[in-house]
Image (tube, rainbow, N blue to C red; front, side):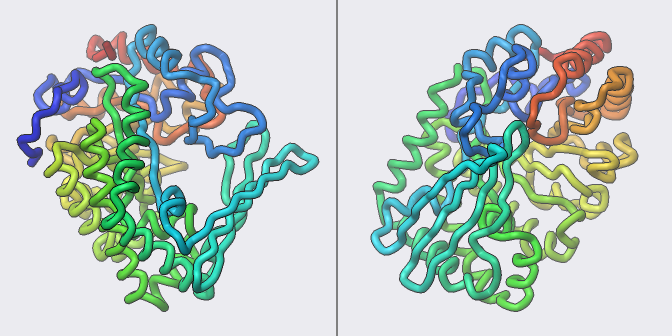
Length: 403
């Protein structure tokens, strides 16, 4: 249940609560990338090290995103960003962070981040190729030899979050800076992940290392999950204070993780996170862009107490082959988004994307569903594919445009 904290009801949230479920918003995952496509401009500044989801240095301004939304009626979810342990090392005396950047002959930006603790140091390598998504080539935690330094980082950061009011002020100010970029009708999300995923994702380690540590160092990893949960509690409180609407986070599907890991870690941790969010007037939004058909059958998302779920991917990126049946199993309590694959948005066959949109419309009547892509996009999609999506929903007579 959402708490009684007084918060202004935004039009899209009002539709989620009590609007006509047969009306269909179009919502794209990345407002900056969609606006870049619409205006025909780059979404990422050349020579800047950034992932495809990072818009800190994007040439696309919030004003451009809002103009794109007004012109097309497409809805967007404004991101307040992600705050992690590395962001607050500046407030911890005995942990040091340094960053070195260099560009090779092929124009690939190589960013090396080194974290030094009293019990050891870790370093990673993040590469940004020209005109392609960025990725980690090496992770901070490469194996169990890095576990002492990683543990020190997480546990001491958790303690600092609980005890250092300067960190709380820093987090609120970071969130508020982003909130102030958007008008009052735009929904806003703070990226706060469940501990078992956020501590075993690419920011810190690769999946094989994560499985090794979960198997061989279960007690220690679970202690770190609890420390990260304490960090999350502070982040949720700060997000609510700053004016966020949602806590948003991603968890890969069964293409990587097992049902057992879901039941043991992701489900209870997501439930706890969403309960904390609800107690502060926020809602929970989960992104799963891979294999989620069995997870739907298992009732995972109801057990997580999620309010919005994406991405409902079909092959080849997902395995939800029968969207109508899958959406019915999710039920009416949860609002869904997506179901038009990233691969389809990049396709040169514009007829295929129109067919897919019609299929989604035919598969989701009676359930609140926002049509859109199944993941963030870089480089931007072809403009005509985005506009074809909007056009098909308009022609259905069920379109719910943004303000």
